[in-house]
Image 1 (cartoon, each protein chain N blue to C red):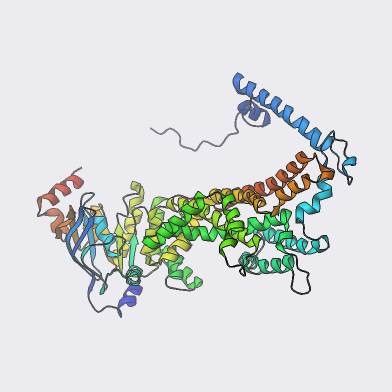
Image 2 (image 1 turned 180 degrees about the horizontal axis):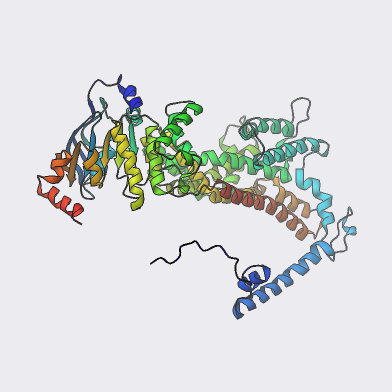
Length: 258
Length: 366
């Protein structure tokens, strides 16, 4: 993503895009994230997997402060994530997020969904925002649906629009929160194809997903989480062929075994 | 095994399943019980409609200027006719009716402009309606400027007053309600507590009490030189009362918007007010149209309660006219007329809200 690269080269000299040091989070008494230590370099593709309830979604939702962590330090693009609303908004502008249930704005057309943040957050004129939106809609191969409303699209199409919507903000990092889990099987591929292309263009990505094929093709590192902890972390090839921990082995045998 | 190599072409539906006769058979006479209910319903309708039409139209008296012109067999619309201008303007001086008429015409024009989708400049029209029109209306109705004689507010009345109370109440209650609803959902404890107390106070007190307090009690507390007009006090009371109801309607709508919408907007870096204004509120308002219009309709009818503090709205002036010794005994006509006028306005609002719902529907699916 050339624009994303030029966008940030001046803001951060550091090579680390996301740093999570000793991050802990509780829901009431429940300890969801335990001593998370994770560093993601610019251009790295990370896949996070693990059983449900293991805290993987919570982990990536902490990065753009959709969830608040109670202990530890998170730094995004060189900026420490604090309680300050301005800082949070600043970080969110540079972090794109794609949700399991797409969360497109149903009252806005596809084009407006993509324009609204560039226009209202980055204060781009409408013409420019629309041109930008069309460019990204073109890239996710859905430009011909630009005037439709999300309710008129299939799940796969909606998710591709959601990706385009995030890209319109020229994010430095993209977070994917189980982007294909809510999709019918025949639509998973069209979304994964877009994600693979994005990865090939050098986008920094953190993906929570169960698509192990995707992990094998694009991930630089696979992270396995269980009970709020990072259990194992490795390049995909050794991760899948030679998992170290028992829990990873069990998990992999369960999802790959059938 | 392949069943069909080609798509089966569309064929017409079998005879007897479409058309008016088929509709009757399918919906009104499909079985003995349904047929009995249909016939019974038609009979009841006949019993109700025929005498009503007979009374209201066929036997009714329309022209004249005193009770002697009425035969008393049917409705005496002469009464309504003779008092019509009072019903519209209250005790507004008749030589100044033209001022009220201009305001009426502008009001109707604004409504028509906003409602007819083809007309352009809706945004400017809204600004005009909210900022400039009230000033014009005040100057014209109240007078005291540009050589217009003053007409103090206690002479305003009739439909004019009803419309004034209702429109100010609606236009005031909606934004205040939105702010209160957002405040009640806020994480800030002081804002939240204030909104909860405000809403619960105004919702827990009958409107009559509020109007009564505003007109009788308030002057006792305020310094005597601070003499706020009675109409203004009623307007403030009515608006705050309705805004509490509106707040709860809006809060209900806000709760129906999935959290993911706010999260998606937040993830794009939008501030709280942009998230609310651009993403959450437009969707919530669309879902709340039936609830909002319901509140508007009840507000429109609640305006009749200003009678209690001596303001003569449409119903109040009709009642006052009924006690006129020259027109004793025409209360049915008076109330039917008042009911009809109220019904026209409330029904129009209801229809327009249904139209809006259809128009704003974008195949909503979360």
